[in-house]
Image 1 (cartoon, rainbow, N blue to C red):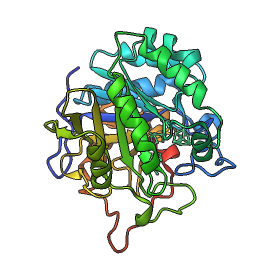
Image 2 (cartoon, rainbow, N blue to C red):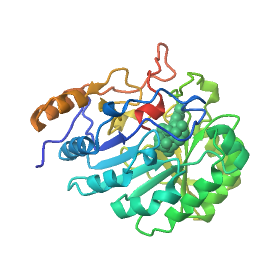
Image 3 (tube, rainbow, N blue to C red):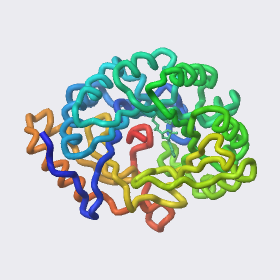
Image 4 (tube, protein in one colour):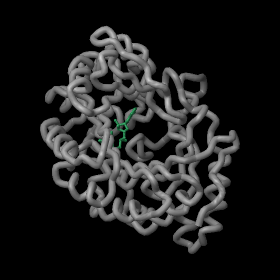
Length: 331
Ligand code: SAM
Ligand code: SF4
């Protein structure tokens, strides 16, 4: 059943949903989780596959056609390919993608592609084994790269995007290797500015390597040319002037793109978040389990989305970091 589009109070039409399928993770990235992990949600608080599928179907019928599955690490959720198959079968879901740290891709890539996953983002912050270990606290680069190569062998998915968090004092040294990778493969390498969503609340503005600084570093190696920005895209995409490869710069801190943000998020425990930096959330799991029908759920969702934040306030006086970390929100 086709429903009216989902609009917020600032006139933005919501078309993109990020679903966190678990808060658990097999990595402990410095910018996301503490070394000892976090207290995981108890099993019964996590949305079941049928519950996720019901909410996704409802949102998709309101025009939220793009769905990205994330976490925590989505591939650690048991039977995750079965969820992918359920969502891929929904008629109004047009784009189904996954963000993963890649550690379990060797095991799962085939099952996920077969289940209907269409696009993948694989997070890799360093192409050097020791530095990868230092940042993720896991000696796992080789395994991730093997999974990535396996995934790249499936012609029906792509382009595969590689996401690296841009941290000043760390990422500069990674630029030449990532540039070579972007130029010698079909991967689109994207740098994401470090955001204040770390578990340790240790973020400072000085730790952000900005998109402008990265652009200068990359352009000095091989000149870049901007491509036109697609509406609501997070990344500014560039191609190398000689036509070999692409680079994406995601600059939420230095150049916020809130103005045409079309995204909402569903956490693993069934809370609707209208911004990465929301300080309030809307519970959908409670009404769902209490027997709310689709019309009631639709009204709760519309009311929450209507109040979607105009923008984030990073860098402004009084900015408050959300209690949840990126791993518990779903990046
Ligand atoms: N575990 C999966 C992964 O790492 O790809 C999916 C979840 S992870 C939270 C999603 C994305 O958020 C990853 O690309 C990760 O690098 C990014 N991320 C996590 N914490 C971040 C932060 N504080 N600032 C910017 N990006 C962050
Ligand atoms: Fe896990 Fe992804 Fe967070 Fe790293 S960024 S700790 S892989 S959820």
